[in-house]
Image (cartoon, rainbow, N blue to C red; front, top):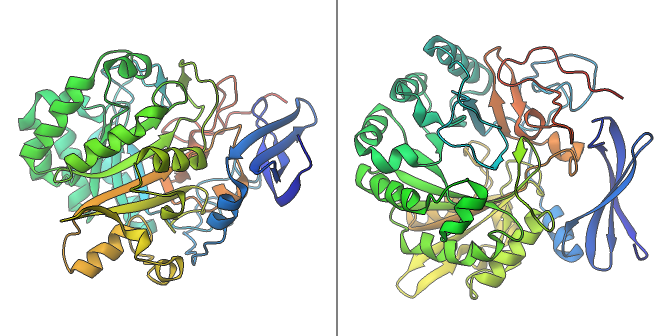
Length: 435
């Protein structure tokens, strides 16, 4: 590495043994790198942002924090005391609930390593989970029902109804779309039960992409699922797992597809792939949120620039960011070009399910439903990229049957050999990883 400038110091984990280790964030040759050193497994260096000036600009955003109720008091330290512990800085704004580990696919890329034989939890388990979330965080967090594949449960409408009866307003399913593409009556049942949105895996517009990422050509299923959601009156967020060498060049096409279907596609969520669970897809390099921001800006044909993406405000500035394209008679216009960073921070609403997002401001301005497309980039961490100062600001939680709410990146944290520090779903005693 060329001469470097220290930007900040934090802590990470060793990908081999998950030991907490010191970590430095440095700028070198215009990019930003994460440097770590484990006394047993040696040093590592990873580029985590392509442009140091843009990294500094993102880090300059500041939002107030609202601490959650601390649920764990163990002394193992971050990230093993997640639950959250007394050192966590942000309350939940989105809570995931795994309703099954079964799946009707076996995707080469799956952070859950979903399979087909596990037994599903009973409905009473979800009654308890929704009650725990309400008692600990109120009813303002959004609820995402996930898996596995949630639509393999025929009683999914009953689970949605339990969430609605518990007082939650924003309820979505995270789905591959296979059932949604073939069964509009099931979607109608879900809508009647209280479902408000569908978070649909959507990795590109070419069949070969789905063969590589999902193990089968699912493009027609995705398109049919979107049409059925349109007919059922359910809004869709397209969730694109972005992988270098596979679909990085597809971001612009998916953006244009989303804008052409904005009456049903409310958002586009871009998720650089992270290494947890099953990852059997060759990628020349790992991508960061910064890489995706610059790529969508380049592929948007002038609709967006890297500085149109503001941190969401509900988590660390380097964990999630968003832009909003208003649909006008003259075409899509980036709202960030009408709202300064200072105005954006001043409009922060701690009760919003997603923090201070630009769509909130568009809604306030139009005094009604904002016509346009939200674009969100999520920067999930794994053992290679983990930074504990970011983890302490996580607001995306996974609720467990025993009453805990674990930060998403902590819950899914695995070593390079697949060992976990938090067990799936049940929060049994943490797995001790060999030193």
